[in-house]
Image (cartoon, rainbow, N blue to C red):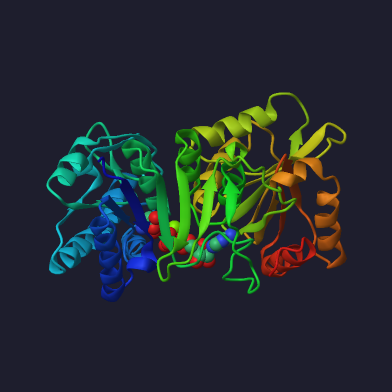
Length: 409
Ligand code: ADP
Ligand code: ASP
Ligand code: MG
């Protein structure tokens, strides 16, 4: 009989100590003894990645991105080798492999690389030898043999890509909470675990700040139809299933609002006094795109007397480059003033049922308004509504929306 392949990923807090690494070893051995081919993907231990970033920042505030990837990829090498040692110590066979050794090929966008393909032969040959295969998350290799990393939180994506390559039944993401909640359980005490989510809802939650799953992992899962089970590494409770809910036999009741998310890692750049004529916005955003800056929200005001203003938000880490690009355009675009606001955050509500329920946006805006929380920008698409508000009101706003949409326990 052909064996099942099981892929389990453990995040930083789940391998944050020797004791926890031993727990992961036990889980891996149990699954192997049940007759499965077992792959474990790990993140770096605890705060290792942050510590490495801090270390580099003491030497340079603009380190080469290739060298940062070389540095950060070491975090996962520590955890995978320790787990292999732990499993061996318990009498079972295991081998740790880097992205290079497996053949996880990516493009060459250092620090935000995309997985292009995953080779299977080394993994299969290790299964044949009876090994539990432990693979470093978050890292890959370019066609030039340079080490890349996949962006913060990217170990999730490694796990999903391996699940797709090996045709695993599903991909288990073990973390420090019981699953995907109606909002961050770290800030709202009565947040509720969601038992099942569609890929599209999870995509919107991940892209709007819920860091429980790496956005690209969900994109990859949707394309390759990999079912994800997000669950706790500290208990055996059933977690959250992320899958193609449309294909389920019993049609699920779609929640109008499934979750509230927030993103405090954003800054707003505004350019004032620009000519209200065709091509100005195009030029501005073309130059930002050339500098590899992703734009999130955009608002252009109605031009008055031929003069307009545009505000947009980008990630904190892109601020220095973004500011430079806009400064360089000041003359050619006749920009009068540039304003940077680092005191903002994005607040979003997500739900597949919004499509067929009018009034959701009105409830969101009036709840914020009646509590004196000003909305600076708005964006909507069929299953998500986002607002930019002041950062110092964000936690309060998340709680208010979580309450008004009845998401609590
Ligand atoms: P890991 O190290 O296991 O990858 P992360 O820190 O990346 O874990 O993600 C888990 C964290 O995501 C949780 O501890 C929680 O604080 C946060 N989080 C944010 N939004 C949500 C949400 N909607 N549901 C669950 N967790 C969330
Ligand atoms: N260790 C990496 C990070 O901290 C990847 C991950 O945890 O998924 O971002
Ligand atoms: Mg994570």
